[in-house]
Length: 102
Image 1 (cartoon, one colour):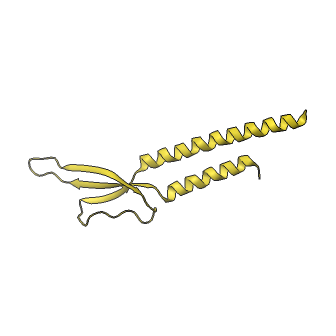
Image 2: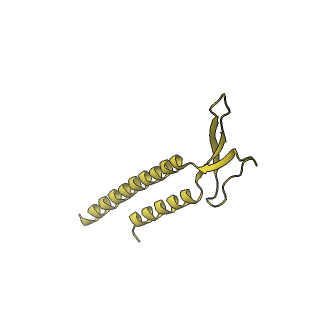
Image 3: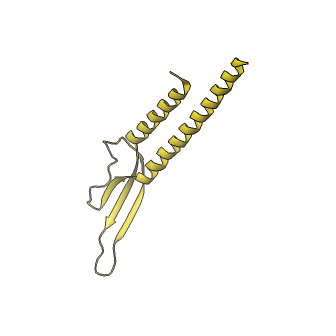
């Protein structure tokens, strides 16, 4: 297995781990009364296993949801780092092969 394939495999493993332990948001919603339009709040709940989301209060106004924007940013960063590492490893391998040919 070449070093470039190892870099790609490492990137895929990192994407899978990010997907299994995604960022979560705690949410709070209230409906408006006759004189207000209600209230909505979201705050970070950290990282938790995909199939066991964090638990908030017993009220129906509290909830949790995946922070998809943060997850997509994580995946984009992992992809960019993997791509850069793949290029660097490929360039280093190319230089070492040229040095051996002379």
